[in-house]
Image (cartoon, rainbow, N blue to C red; front, side, top):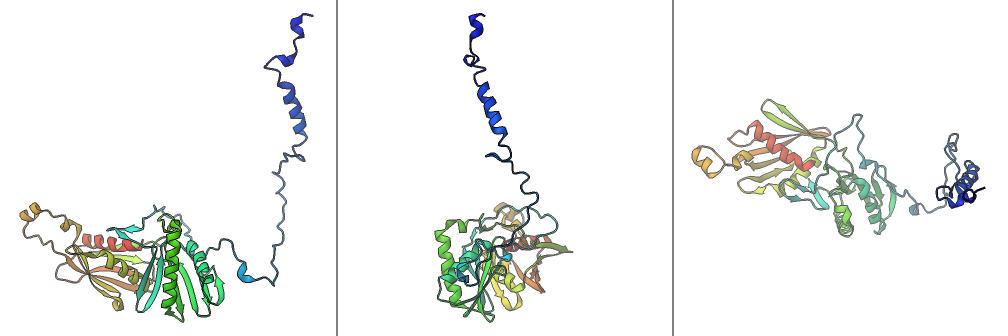
Length: 332
């Protein structure tokens, strides 16, 4: 036999790993089901649910609860049909209005807080607030967003603006000023120490907010708003006071909570853009503001918002729509 034929297969680079591969395959073939590499695909076919774990009745109930309690108010009822995907909206509204993390709303002596975070984010903060106060807790219901105290009740619900929440502190229907002030300080402090809470993206985790509907009837535009009149008026009152403060363009003249109405002066964008040359060519064009009454008509659990003429000049349908879109934007 030639010496060339006596060369061991282990000295051929292409073949030296073949024996090791064969040994490994034989060793692992016996581990496919019962060994280290057990195939568990069939282990859960006939699994039966076990009984739930129960804590003893003697436990301290205040020390135990859901790890991540999410109130049902954080997720409005799902629609049977797919809804449009809405882009995240900034905390800055039209006109550069900055929305603080905690703001106050009020109408006819009733006051509550609006927080720029969804109810699922605010609820743990309310629980933490209650634990830090010398109060007696009688009932806690995350599903209803309610904390009952011997001194009153703290109630949480989704706000009108997407990703915001409303917090009320009441006793037999009367707002508790001291409680609301303490909540305002506590929540504002949490926002400053946990910067993510004031993020516009974090403040809008869901997009199932009830939609506003614009409708036209002849020369009259209206907006159907699916919320109670008190809540809508208080929200509009807050933002109109901030936004309608530009002389000659838009001004809040009067707020009438008893009538659910506002009187404003408004100059449509078309007239505001009139330049000097245009004014010279059209000297009869009146570019002064229109006097308009923004009226809310309560209809049960919803209201209808209209822009009605309150002066001698008639606001056109196009300009009505423009004004209503700006005002309705406060509620989105």
